[in-house]
Length: 299
Ligand code: GDP
Image 1 (cartoon, helix red, strand yellow):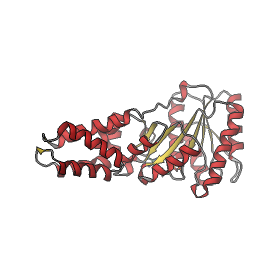
Image 2 (cartoon, helix red, strand yellow):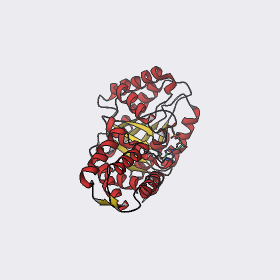
Image 3 (tube, rainbow, N blue to C red):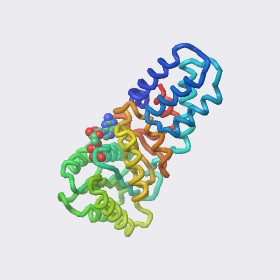
Image 4 (cartoon, rainbow, N blue to C red):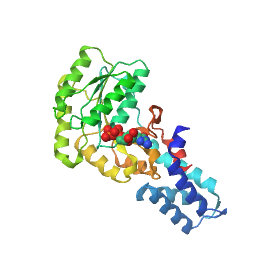
């Protein structure tokens, strides 16, 4: 329900285009197929997926009379098939303790919000959660995270502005081990303007955390904002190649008519999509389900 509502901008755009292109039940011809392919590209599904999906649809339906509903069903099925191998589970409570989750991504992508939502969900299930405010450059980010921590009734660690983020991460994990926390959530900076500096800092955080637990971080979640469209692909590329990512969170799918961008991101990435954000509320962060996503996207 929330998913469908959250994706309503995307599905409205695609739905209207499909409706206007396929008003009458007419035999599917090449012109209609081209129109469909163009529509999928416009929805940011990317040229490769658009071509594959259109081709598959053409093989099934060419020359046959199709109506709007059949098109939507076939599209949802094709997109669901494309994505189902890219689904991943985020299950911090079934892993080792303390389970260390690192949140990475550019500023504004929704890292803090996502971390806050996850903290609230985990404490709601009885877990003992420690949050480390590793974006030590932005005082506002630290304050915002503190609000989320209070709301979630999670414990919170921060350092003065400009402090070493890796030192904070080390202290947080040490405390978590000593005091029996279930999960440690580590926020990080995201100032891509200083790319090398940022990458060095993230590597350092990972290095010091490994000194305490060679398997940590157990998850490195890359947070991507769907509203930046195909820029999300470039971000996936940078963080995926330079840092290594275990799962992707795509946020703000409710804020764009181009939610289809999840498809090329999912296909370009080595790591699965684990969670999606379809609003600002705690319930709006959801496990990624490929078929449900595809259905809601198409409308
Ligand atoms: P950060 O800089 O990466 O930590 O980003 P923030 O967590 O501060 O998020 C930036 C803005 O995006 C905030 O206003 C959030 O409320 C908003 N936001 C985050 N996730 C979502 C989402 O799924 N949907 C919508 N509509 N807004 C979101």
